[in-house]
Image (cartoon, rainbow, N blue to C red; front, top):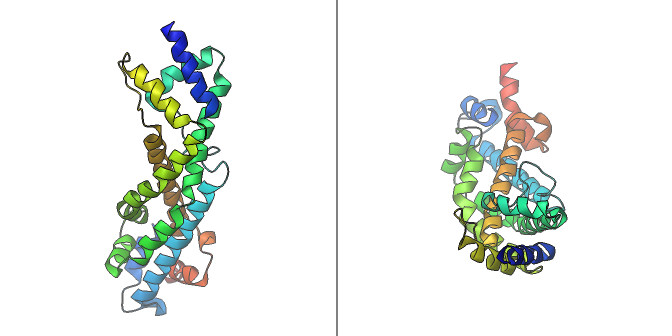
Amino acid sequence: MKKIAFLFFTAIFLCSCTELQQVAGSLPSSGNNNLSQSQIVAGLKQALTIGTQNSANQLSAVDGFFADAAIKILMPPEAQNVEKTLRQFGLGSLVDKAVLSLNRAAEDAAKSATPIFTNAIKQMTITDALGILRGGDFAATNYFKGKTTAQLTAAFSPVIEKSLNKVDATKYWSDVFTAYNKFAAKKVPTDISAYVTQKAIDGIFYEVGLEEQKIRKDPAARVTELLKTVFGSKQATTK
């Protein structure tokens, strides 16, 4: 009877729910190839602005998370046994709806990322910029992680919670798995909003990392004259 009740309430929940570094080396502050240090930094900031905007736009679109296998938000690993049981009982479509609701919440939250990244870029010092220029392939992404994670968490959390609350997902998840954890050896996180928030932030930094690689290595991604000049200078000096 307890098992049936547990499945019932879970079903209710489910139904409701590396070029930059090389450039820095070849273009010192004295202005090699007619570029000053300030121009190089301006190029970097422009690249980061374009990259982060592209990332946020991509992820905030419908299916931005859901259709991307690399960042699609799935049930927490601790809940996978429950998910397997539900699918065995013919509730696979309900599980799929629940997973979709998690990803839709993340897509809603991604809309608020752009101004946070823009502010971090505006506050970037020359020292910060040069550190990114001389850093590794993901130096810019790591910079954003350090500067924006707390703000992204604060911005994403209420949006995700509101989105999940629309289908009572937050309430049912907490009620069902609080009861489940009393008997389970492997506990399931009871705060689904916090779980989705963290996965959403992981996803957006993953996408920012991809954009960083495009700017570093793909000439077609340099869509302004400044970017072409700054990031193409290395090729010009090696011809």
